[in-house]
Image 1 (cartoon, helix red, strand yellow):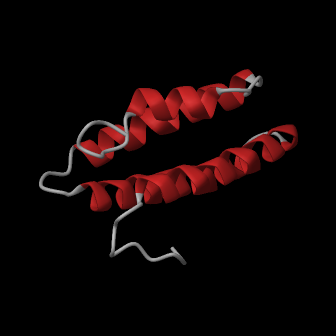
Image 2 (image 1 turned 180 degrees about the horizontal axis):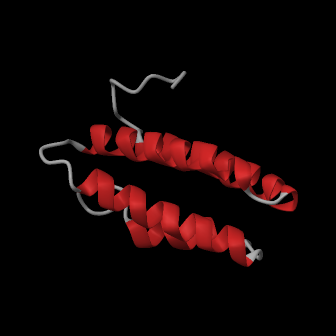
Image 3 (image 1 turned 135 degrees about the vertical axis):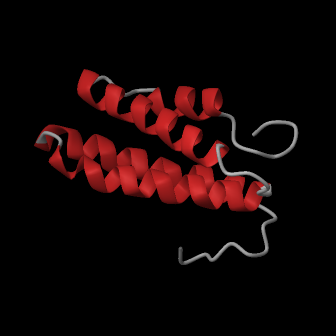
Length: 102
């Protein structure tokens, strides 16, 4: 997170790309992160909690798109989503409105 408590794209990208070997999956993850950060950053007047919530929603939608990827990439993507769960629990720390069952 940056000094204001918002997720940083470069940190998210670096962390999520660690250990991902498949070039197609790497491209998918990089593209998803860029698109989601671009989309969420374009929405004005949002606090860090709302920003993180929208970013999480965007990543989840991108995850659904991954259903068309090769079968060997599915396990890597499951690991990717598990890491997101951890990552976003960190981002939402202190956000009272965050629904744990999101």
